[in-house]
Length: 270
Image (cartoon, rainbow, N blue to C red; front, side, top):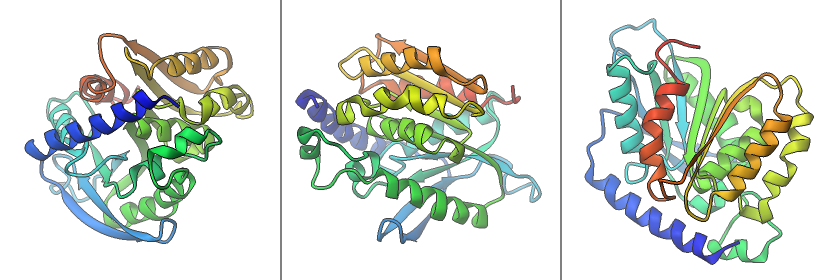
């Protein structure tokens, strides 16, 4: 693992948190949920689309997002979604933001690379975080809100790593996966190296996957994943990889999310 990547991730988190704290957030609700899988209480922020309160019979898909705190990425993602829905450019969805407690624990899988473990006191907890989402959070969202079975997830950096890992480990959990500048260097690129076998083992897979990389040092692994997808993606997988050398790891989320969400969750289903 590159020390530059660790420094970059730390710097990005600080900058993003400062920016998010200063920007307005469209109307939303917040609730807490005790997680047996994680052994802690988690704070959840929920945006409901225009018209949700008016039409009591209507149901909506859900976009889940790690890094979903009010001082994380929730404000700019929800602002993008709200604007796109009101413009008729994106179908109405709820946005469920999961606020972080131990981000690097939750977003990373196990690693055999010694330097990886130096980025936080605890790492390797992605399986428990996924159980929390699938077995605890999703049922609670279905209980509280009028939702359909359509689900999507978006994440960047280590959250992008979690998105790709979830796609490869449990692809049925979401319908649409969006990973922006995913930190696929984790554990010596283990996810990339295992991707071909995992894809071949699921010939009947139906899902959508979007991956984008920026022009700095966390992009090459994503390009290697794209080569594997070109060779081994099942016919039922709708996928795209986009290289954005004009962007950086720090700018790709805000730059790509508005276009990607409009294209992959369009007003009219493709």
